Amino acid sequence: MKIFDLIVIGAGRGSNLAVKAAKLGKKVAIIEKDKLGGTCPNRGCVPSKLLIGYANKIREIKSSKKHYINSYIDTIDKEKIFEDTNDYIDSVESFYEKKFNENVTVYKGEASFIENKIIQINEDKITAENIVISTGSRPAEPLTKESWTSDDIFPLEKIPKSITIVGAGFIACELANFFDAIEVKTIQLVRGETLLENEDKDIQEIFKNEYTKNVDVRFNSSIKEAKQKEDYFDIELEDGNFIQTQALLYAIGRVSNADTLNLENTDIKLTKRGFIKRDEFFQTDVKGVYVVGDASGENMLQHAAAYEVNYLFKILFEEENKPLKFKYMPHAVFSNPEVASVGFTEQKAKELNLNYVISTTSWKASAKAKSLKIDYPKTKFILNPYTYEILGCHLIGFESATIIHQVLAIMHIENDIRHLKDMLYIHPALSEVLLPAAVNAVKVIEEYKKSQES
Ligand SMILES: Cc1cc2nc3c(=O)[nH]c(=O)nc-3n(C[C@H](O)[C@H](O)[C@H](O)COP(=O)(O)OP(=O)(O)OC[C@H]3O[C@@H](n4cnc5c(N)ncnc54)[C@H](O)[C@@H]3O)c2cc1C
Image (cartoon, rainbow, N blue to C red):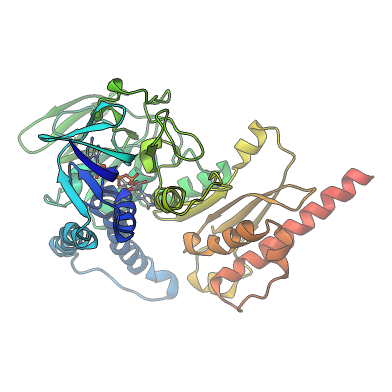
């Protein structure tokens, strides 16, 4: 049996832990069954955002009439778009390989547990004082054979003439926006009436209104039967309609990879959804075995996984003894329009019976926003009227994911909406949209307080 100081299973964000521990001189084993780097750079955040760059540019050109510019797109070189994106993906493995020093042993293969702290990898049995499970998640199985998930489209090989995307979440809305923008005939099938159901309901509504101006979304639609023909799918929908499509992509959620680990040989417990249970120090039910990132099923975002990995490094090697509890978890949807959000949605605040007030402002007062000639962007705050605390903030509009960082900074340092009202903004930077939003939010709180006094 080989003995290491640290074993990391899954070389997504977990690879950073291996790199940092090895720099300290620890003997580290990292096990990866697919590509080093994991989901984010190979088949997730990065390639999907590279595609959004093309989509945004195309949408901008197509909407140039608003700026009194008559323009048309001559050709979209889809081959080149795919090639460029694949060039990036091809560079990922060697980039990660180079990060590991001589203290790291990289095992390529699927790891499984033989007992609590013994791992089988290929022909080897290995153990370590600390074992970290960072096995991520994978797309839920597509319901039709030969169809795709987000894992199958990266690297991009086949440019379809038409694509049908099943799903209503952020992955479906980012990919459908891309394919539609590059003029692949795109249909999105959504089981209910809602897109982005985790967003605040007002944001959902604006998103739906704007997004469906471009993408052909069929609501209340699900597939009854999909027959694969030579080069296309014949799809019969439950409502009796038919679709013919060359590619069929399911983006219907993500599931745990815990089933690959033979955890039945250990005392490690799973959550109801099949992800790995842990405490606030990331420890599973087995002492010295930890879980970080998507494998816990908790946040399922790259920045959460990266933060957890860095924090676990401190716990393991820098005597950090405070538990990690995220006070808030921001996220964004890089589609068209762009959405960014942190904290509670209004529906969640209601469900939790919180005392809250709402302030919603448009971006119209901003000269920079005006220059974009789009009138839907909004900022919505959900606030505690007694403490001025920001309970939730939701933005929809150009560069929302960038603008929300000001709100995050305030929430991180001292969560009080008045700081956002009192700070100095560069006029007329786009982020200045938060000034009238904060002024209004404070006004709403003060009016609420007055109404409570009378
Ligand atoms: C299309 C798409 C777009 C996304 N966009 C964003 C975004 O914009 N912003 C954002 O924050 N997040 C985004 N995400 C989510 C983000 O990619 C994940 O949250 C993040 O990659 C999780 O990192 P991780 O290290 O936990 O898991 P992963 O990166 O999935 O790494 C886990 C690794 O473990 C390996 N593995 C699994 N089981 C075993 C085993 N038994 N033995 C050995 N190896 C194993 C896997 O092969 C994988 O490489 C996106 C995801 C997708 C699919």
